[in-house]
Image (cartoon, rainbow, N blue to C red; front, side):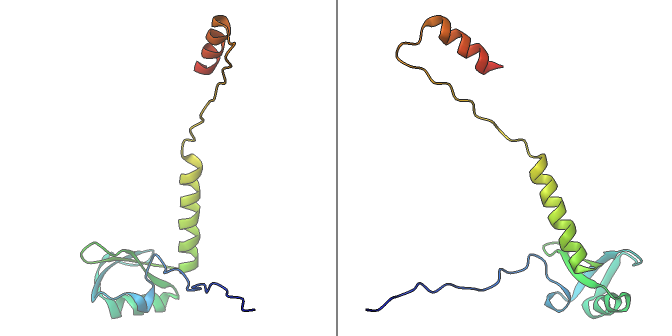
Length: 119
């Protein structure tokens, strides 16, 4: 008797932001603390990040040139998670009220339940 198991693809999901050597652009706009906001070649931006002991994180890849931030990547991920959590918690939750009526519901009971549901 053969038992067949479904094979699963255990690849890690791709990171949302490119970091350090994964950035492919030649020129980047660099922002961050203790850094002059300017457009730099990618090699110089990586060197600046290394000198500060931080990571070069691509924030906005679709802009021209891409915007990169010099920050500790683990701190950046933590801040992103925190921001997403606050967005989810502040989202308005809709509550759907349900009213049950039977075949013998009288007009007065119907009106009472209707007023109660509107509140």
